[in-house]
Length: 358
Image (cartoon, rainbow, N blue to C red; front, side, top):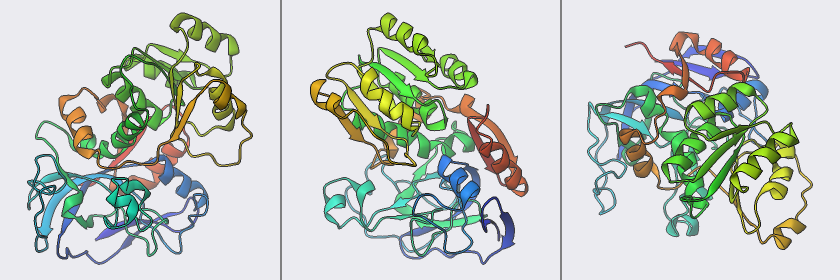
């Protein structure tokens, strides 16, 4: 099969590799569509993310949809595995599926308490965080556990299915916030994840949704998709105007990872408010932490997701979260380097995807 490997910063190489084989409890997926995530872009630009450095050529891609073409022997069924909507339910050869790229051990204390995203033995495809590295979706075939597959409804496209992973990031963040319905929400950062979070916040019943980003296109795009306000964080008067009109923000989703935004959010959020930190922060940040005490703020982290794929798929299938406008461009597999180059510009494109030839 053909794969696209990252072999050093900004060096994507098409190579041949052996077709993978599905073992017990696994299925082999013929990849149809794979999305380029912000973490993929970081690997592409710097050949690392923080302490995660590839130990050799790495096949990126963890946002993917495809068709089941082979299956290993099935695992023993459990009540969870046979529940409608659960991972693996109804999955058979020929099924159109979206993939959960995370593989927790299911036996550690974190897994047993339902916090699978914090598993200390977690495996994840398409990243250097797992050693040995597990190949991601920029390949013709990928093998994953059957339980990591979620059937895509007939009226949901391959591209929408490949968005199930970033939608799940947003859903998990909303659940970490506690209550979203009726609250005035600011999404700090209008990049890909910020746009998904804004859609999910609206679907979860937020009273007001504002998106803050220095780029005009991102602000306008968010408003076009249902946000009430686009805020330019470089203009204090703009933020002051929106806060006055809305009564301020009870809940802030920090999706930019930009140190100035992380600091400012502690000052912007209303007393008794909540901040959910989603964005990865590249450097240490000095924060006015006394505000956490004096304003009685709740500050929580949100890392990936845990068991939210059924909820995310329902949002996609019902189009209460309509991701179709977020898919800015789709490239052929052979043009993957061009797709990454466009995504790395971090310009007007929101979500770039790559599609295999039939």
